[in-house]
Amino acid sequence: MRITFLNGLYPPHGNAGAENSLRLLAGSLQARGHACSVVTLTPSARPEHGEVDGIPVDYLPLANVYWPHGGHRPRALRPAFQLLDAFNPFMLRRMSAMLAERKPDVVNCHNLQGFSAAAWLAAARQDIPVVQTVHDYYPACPRSAMWKPEAGNCRSPCPECRLFSLPRRRLSSIPAAVTAVSHRLFDRLAAAGAFPAAAAGAQPVRIIRGNNAAIVPPTAPEHPAVPLRIGFMGRLEPTKGLENLLDAVRAAPAGAASLAVAGTGRSDYVARLKLRAAGCGAIAFLGHARPADFFPTIDVLVIPSVWEDPFPRVFHEALAYGVPSLVTPLGGLREVIRVAETGFVAPGADAAGLRAGLAALLAQGWDRAAMRARCRAAASAYDAERIAAQYEAVLRAAAAGQAIPEDAGEVWRAPPGSRPRRAGTTEVLHGT
Image (tube, rainbow, N blue to C red):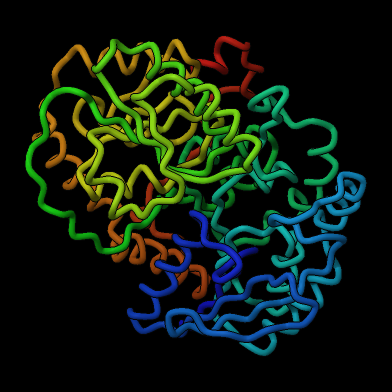
């Protein structure tokens, strides 16, 4: 097949989770004999052409009022950006010209911010089937997060989201199939009114999770039972729940545990985190760290998110190194963790829940060597070739106008019953 992938960012302009997953996927499908290409955005005013891992990449200039990825984003211009990003006619023309040049058999769209839902229409007008892969909440939220700093996880779409996501809802029947990285992600999208055809059972949805590059974990001696070496790796920002983790570690018995924090963030926020951890010698901030250098130095990874994180890559990257995770009950991770075998789920997403989760780990004396072996075995579910085969089955069926195979990922079905009710504060905190 001739496959064109579309994503708002791609190296060198982006190297986050979605970009890394797509880069691995494109490389795997290219190796399986398909002619792959990538279309992405550039902050430059001129189109650019490049190559990443032997795959041609077309960088289209973003036609909007500012570049949304880093740099200065004037608050006064945000409504104008979101209005244009609801349906961007300028990007429709640019995408149409690019597809006419590439002539793919199928388009696999990933993160649409910048392109807008106009990317679907550009493909549909040229009778090119589309498969939409969902990594975040963009189909229902212009901020892609369904989260507000002052309020936390959104219980239902606000008027702003309903307005700006209207074109996405109206055009969302164009994709021949949708894939998502977790059931929880698509449950929340469907409850917010996104992809109504999927919720009605007329549009197939498959859950295809993240992919890992080939990893050969280093051989390391067994470590003593204490102190428990805890790690965090990721972007340092409020949604990650780091304040709660710092408080939980500070409350642990002296000498029972240490915490290594790997990652970067805004300097003012990182300074506040360090001030919160001041005086606790068990906590160290490492800055940027390579996974291969970081994971062998910890016993358990903690993902303390207070956000409904769809499915963070760091979880299955840690599995490949034999490292289990302690996670909060929010987001998509609890779907795959086998408790006490490949990880642990804290009883809540607040500081008290994390304290209880850490206390249980310190008290129960779990067999770390046995758990490392189970984690490495579980990592095979995220093997790059296995994930590529699932995508290949979906893309091939879409290109041929055939039914999407049920064994290409996990089948998502709309939850039975009526519309989800609004959750209370306690339920939001505890993920129920």
